[in-house]
Image (cartoon, rainbow, N blue to C red; front, side, top):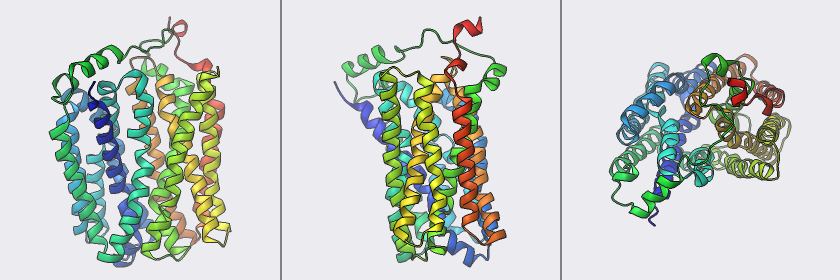
Length: 422
């Protein structure tokens, strides 16, 4: 049997790595932008959040477009848009142009996770999808930031801020070319033999929950405790994630007085622990389910624990040692991805059988509200107080609220079972 499906999973992983490199590159240039363009922390917070304005808005339209047009050309075109927007950021002359290019970046990156989800349903067998989704989706986030941070720090130190956008944007364009050349559906792919095609036909959509309803009304979806709990908890998780994605390099430069090069090196360390969180959360909750735990209870353990660990970012402001600060930040990122690794599995498990995409869209829309608010709120808090402890405390409070939401709202009793829909 050929192994085209795993090569496509690898291509999807590379896309998410590039995706997050092009999201985080601005964070490393933020201190330079604030000096060169005479922006305060509040203005920089607006720039850092601008990507999410359109990213949030295009999630559902892009999902519908992918269903209608397919992933090959649309995802390839999207990568061209986000790569081009990244490269054009090198031409920025102030707040307005920075916001404009980041807004375009949000449009280009909008299809990334819907496309990954759709390809998983086409190319990956049921029994392989959990691991493949973790590799291609969630793991790509910490891997992307871990790999790119030292590289971006080096580019900034050696060639200036223009270089990071030109180089990282061009990588997205190269990926788009490879994707369009290589990707086909299984029945049309020249690299896949009949054995692999037959394996996919026989092993996709064969695992189902026989007691789960096919569909629920919008009212039922939006009033369901699990859907609401996952959505609100996701907003708390993404608030913490985008706080660190957006502001961690500035924190290390301003509070820890690191050089640009050392910021790239030390700033990459927490994301390595984020990758460990992905592995522990996904594998750990699966083990509990295999031992007979109810599904939601098993997922909830890691959702709650991860958000509680995310609060440790606050402790980094109260230690003098850089090593201790990085350790606390690493524990926080580990916690964020401990939660994030479980979110999408839980999403599939609480959804009606034919509405996993709709529930994912609801969750992602709620979640990205938290994500887009984080850079702005942190920027205004920094400008108003001049203290990093204040935004760190705010993030810790949001994480605690998220843990409470997951703990008290999620329940195996709120699953969409057929007896409820009758």
